Amino acid sequence: MKKKLVAILLTAAMTVSLAACGNSSSNTAASTPAEEAAGAEEAAGDDAAAGTEAAAAEIDPNDPWAGWANIDTSEPVVINYLCVSDKPTNPDTDEMMVELNKILQEKVNATLELNYIGWTDYLANYNLTLASMDGSVDLVVTADDWLDAWQNVDRGAFMEIPDEMIQTYAPATWAQVDEFGDWDMCRYTDGQIYLIPEDNYRQWTNHGFIYRLDWAKEAGLEDGVHSWDDMTTYFQYCLDTFPDMIPWDVNGGSSVAECTGGYLASAGVESYPLIGISAGIVGYADNQVKCQYLEETDALVAYGNLMKSWAEMGVWRTDVLNNSTSDTRQAFKEGRGAVDQHHTETWTGLCSPGDPSNVFYQEDPDAEAGFFWFGEENDFLVNLSILHGAMALSSGSQNPERALMVYDLIRNDPECYRLFMYGIEGEQYNLVGDNLFERPEGYVDTEDKVDTAFWAGRNDTVGLRNAQLNWDTIDALYAEYDAVAVDNPYLQFIPVTDEISGTMSTLNEIVTNYTKLLTHGQFQGTAEDCVAEFQEQLRAAGVENVIANVQAQMDAFYGTAAAE
Image 1 (cartoon, rainbow, N blue to C red):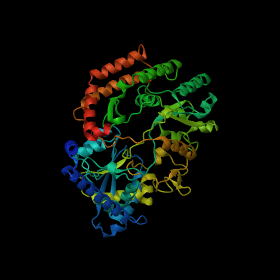
Image 2 (cartoon, one colour):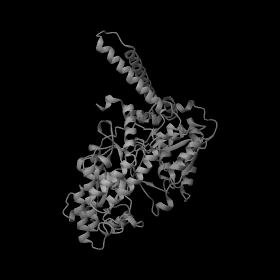
Image 3 (cartoon, rainbow, N blue to C red):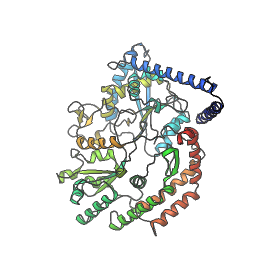
């Protein structure tokens, strides 16, 4: 399909070029064939948009499923749901599904069955399962940035979902996504919808350092940590004040990609990830494809020097590269650690005294957890893709219409949604207020949790907030994010990687090896020498060929006018 798109783009470019030549030699008001074609296409697009708006307007927001009365659901069906997570070992998920299926059978005469792809080799096993297209899967939890959503569209593993099909069988979802104006982000290069976005759920997975805000204030940082230099001051205070503490007892090799990219963002590098492309090859402004590890030499050297100084200070173990047993999050929870490097969603738990697993609040009532997010110095933050969580239909599905009906209910019906997300009221959760829940007394997450890995339709409209969380503090940071965050302009660019995937694998190994040395300050010689060697290895492995390949595809996709 991508080859077809490129051909269409090239044809369009030639047509525009010919039309421009004709206009330069004549001032006639007569339309050219290209203009007539463009006008017809625009008119067709307007008609389609009008039809879509009319269909959305026909959906009653007070009873979006009224139209289902005319759908024949007399034959019972089983809908198979595929997700990525280890299968729960406790009985609670199965018990919840009994209750959920009573509702689904009553409403749409369907039974939902859960199928799990475990975390071990998850992507390979996930893609292998989808490739079979044998009818064993209907609904598929997917993602554009970590579960090969568009790649599986290209392979034919996901079914095209016509607009009218969604309007009929998932009317509540259609209306909400249409209201947000997000359907175009779900269309492939053929203009058809293949994915349903999780676009009504607020989450942030940008990384940074979670730290003790109360300790930062004691270190003289009254407003907390807001730069890498502040972090150095904070670490020095922790080392001086708690001589037996390893402030960041990190495992060797962990955090390297996030920290390296985070430092570059803080240094002023504004780049955007490209779907399916790795090894530091990203999109810069004006449709430029670059490898940031080649482009940002000065920032990488400064990063290496800073990390070397942290190593010499004693921020982590001297044998950090051989350390594989530390748990920085647990150490932070217990007050034994000064930082945990992870994303905002993790911080929302750690900043909440109401979470009983956060022992440090019990030991120190004045404790606080702050968050220094990468890119904060320059207010550079990229919004999460609305397809970071998405639902698709397997091309092998025997009951796609009923599958959409089931999906519409578990996404939008409050009773179905809360069962699927939280479990059985009174057993997994209790309501406290209109939109808050708390866990019952005696609830133990590892023993009592319901796990459906529903990262494909979480919905703030019908969802509940965990009463344990510190929402005033969380909402304040979310508001800060909302004020500065920008969209990734390259989310609809899906490069073909067949010719470069092998080279990227080699490049990824090089990136891992050298960013590990830089991040933990474990390189020999100077940071300049390490970065130069890093770049030399990348070039020798073919990074410039990969850049050229992706750049050519980007030029074809957007056209030269987009880069001007």
